[in-house]
Image (cartoon, rainbow, N blue to C red; front, top):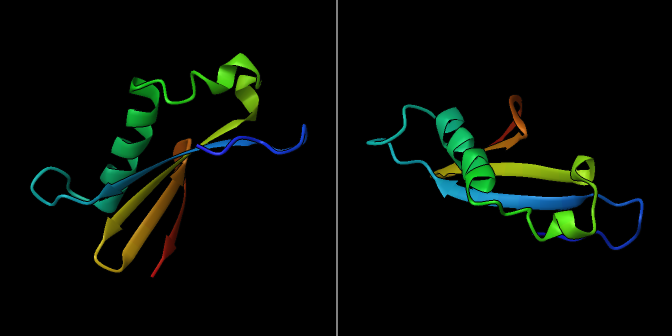
Length: 82
């Protein structure tokens, strides 16, 4: 969790997951699992005490070997880094 330094900065909540082929079909599924975990475990609860909800960003990182998939809030907003 990264808290904003200034009033114009957003807060960032990050969850990292390693792709488990036995449990997930794709890296996209792993990203979705990471983003779901942020919501299910209320990771941004402390941030909401002083930061508006629309200024909190969620990122899910999925790893499989050297492949990385990063998703933000919605699975459609993903970028692949190899």
